[in-house]
Length: 181
Image (tube, rainbow, N blue to C red; front, side, top):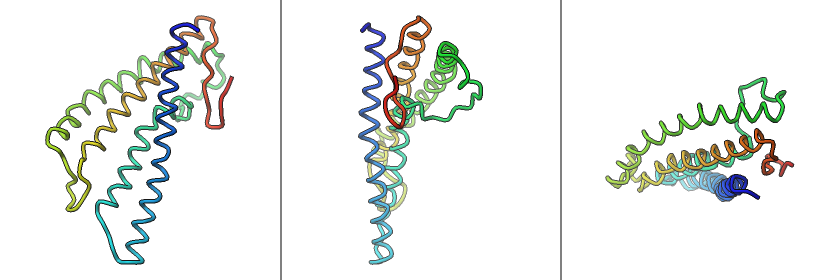
């Protein structure tokens, strides 16, 4: 196994691990949301921080699992011709899309988010709501996690495309139903 294939496998492994761990935030979100509703309507008790917490866990689930979704090829495709392309044709589309569309967007997002996130850390930002969540910088840092994880998976797709264009078989990828290959 050569270096490029090892790199693709390693990036896939990182996003697979992060995705499976972050998926548990979905359960946490449901439990917290259920507790908020139960406390409010059965005991007349409401906590702003609890309401914010389930919004945070929901947002973090989407941001941090995006690289995993990209690994699974579970994102929305708008290219109606892609499905009919050969493996080499798909590799060219993936390579072009990642290099010229995804990566510039991630660089711009990361660059603009850096100031936003670093300011939040520097000021020890808290929720604007009275009795809201502390440590707003944790939630905002998820944006940079999104950029890093999707960017890494983009690098893996570049590697897969190069392997296919070079006549090699890329490491098997996964779908929502299991491994392919």
